[in-house]
Structures are given as C-alpha cells and as structure tokens.
Image (cartoon, rainbow, N blue to C red):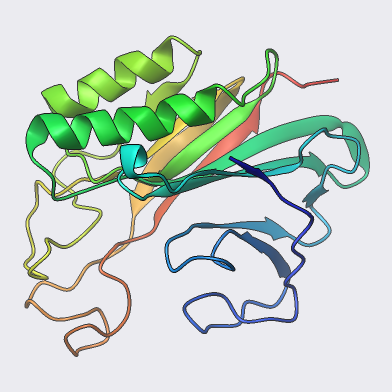
Length: 222
C-alpha cells in the first residue's frame, strides 16, 4: 500500500504514449510496468486538496496476482462539497478458477479497506471475469461495502480473448457505484472481429473496448 504524492501529468503522454489534452492523468505506472490510470477532466474535477490520502496505490503483491488498483479522491471544480472517490482496477486473469478468484478478491479487499464511510465511489476497470458465478462472488464482496455493479448490455463483449479472438461472451470490464446512480444506458465501444488489433495489426491498439455511461452523484462526502 502506497500513499502517493500528487502525480500531475497534464503535459505528459499516457503510458500508452498518447496525449489527451484537457485531462489530467493520475497513474501508478511510474515504478512498475503494471498499473492503471484515472483521468480527471480539467475544469470539471480536480484532486481533492483537503482529502487525507488523495492518491493511493493498492496491490502489487503476489497475493493480489501482482495486479494493482489506484484510488483517486476528487472534488468538482466550483463545488468543493461535491466529492467522489474514483477507483481504477486491473484484476488478475488467466489463473485457475479458484486461485484467480482469491487473487482478485484479495486486491478488491485491499481497496475497500481504504474506502471511507459516506464516500461516493465509482470503481471500474478490467476484472478479467465474465458474468456468472465467479463474478457473482466478487459482486457479493463489493456489495458488503455498498458497491453495486452497473449492468452492461447483454451479448456485447468488452475485450478480446488472449488470442485476440472475438467472443461475444467476453464481458470482463465492469463498473460499480456507491452513492451514485447511472443515468441512461451503458454503451460499449467496438472491438476488432478478425483476430487483429482495433487498428488492423496484431498487437496494435487496445484489446479492450471503452465502457461509457453517465453517473449522477447522489451522496456527497461533506
């Protein structure tokens, strides 16, 4: 567990090398090849200067499958009483079913242990877990802390398989919320269907689609 100083990267590329003007990125990649990123829209949200431990890097241990999460405590610009805690995760994939579950559950347990009562939370990322009993077990773990999964549209995959093959059942990216509600539907970006990356070459671009929805904060940590 690392309590991080502010990493302001507005003028630096993301870990993938892309620039994204108008956003400030907070990343835990700097001391590791494994990590996640949270982007805050400039002029809309800012890192909460009054929060204890506004940036927290979680995980990275063998028990967590060497995977990590990043906690960012933010507040709305111009309305400092409206706060939200954003959590980006990358959970272990490819392990045997029970071993993989234990690694994923361990990392999520580390994350929820850092959440404070009354915080509005949006937790999202690559769970490497499709809907079914394994994901239901993670749902139950997070529900104990008030986090409810946002349902993705059925039959729409969020990632390619490890071989870059298209599989309509490969729904492995998920969003959970607490003190917030989804407005409207969840939309999923397109994936390549020919076994190649989204830009036409193997290994080119991401093997995940974007997951987009509007979330209204219904409770504030004041």
